Image (tube, rainbow, N blue to C red; front, side, top):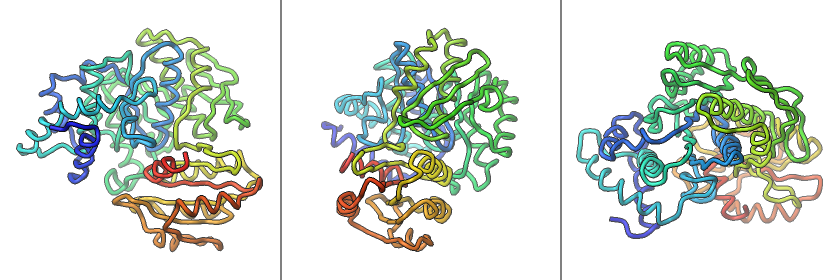
Length: 430
């Protein structure tokens, strides 16, 4: 039995040896043993390829502005492990992590002796979250982010008030499939019978799958660009400004801190979800709560400015769609800057396509690696670049310090790639 926080986290991370084992059988077994805490969690289930974390942040901020206590379950963590399970944006305590592991560890040991096999790291953390919010600290609402895919993800044990699918694009293709319709089948797996769906999916082949699944499950769907629409979007010094029309209301001059057209989409999805909570479940959410919530929402590691002079921005753009959105955001907000890119990524990503987009943006391209099992080597990444000024470095901490000392007002340092890498960087310079 674990005694300290360090032992608890070490035990959780030790489950990584089991890799990924898609399916819900182990979760069903653990929930049965725990007395089905998942049935007591009032949840919004948020899936999609990109934008899940930001959408959680916007919706949480709106609900908090309306006076609700909001639990969140997100991944991966950026600053500390505990933030994966949070209340009103505050990570649960080290002692609570210890207590949750003490509950789940005996079940994991027992499960390991069955034909189902032991639970994975993510299954253990999901079980901890559901026990915490279902038995120990029940919240007004819990925003649950899908870990991977949806259909076979361990979070899909819940039956939510609302489902959200932000978008569908290429990522984790070795697991989810290598076509958009195959990936969409996995994402659509979170759509539940009779549960409303909010989505920003616009790729035709992905939308066809989402729409078909929603019809089959009698899930009323609200689609960005069709059922609710953004207009008058413009970049501002602070972020973005836009107006929004939903089937139920019109909002003028909404503001967000996180820059980028993709963040406007995420915010619009969050507003639509908030409206459905208000209309379908009697949440008392007023227009000023929506405006205030959006204006104050922030999410670490998403176009996060960690230094103004010199200008240093961190962004966890970890797939091709994320990189494309990042490039568009830099061009919209910093069109005159010389952009110096530091990039690190995992080997199971579409690296060549990601690097090609960055090559077109960057004044200089620097590649590095970091301490993570699937991290690509710096030289491997550099070999995929066609940039005339490219380099591979191994001591990225020293490199950042040296580079920052040389930046002028005309330069910016953009550190991007894997969120696990961004997490490491934030610990050093954030």
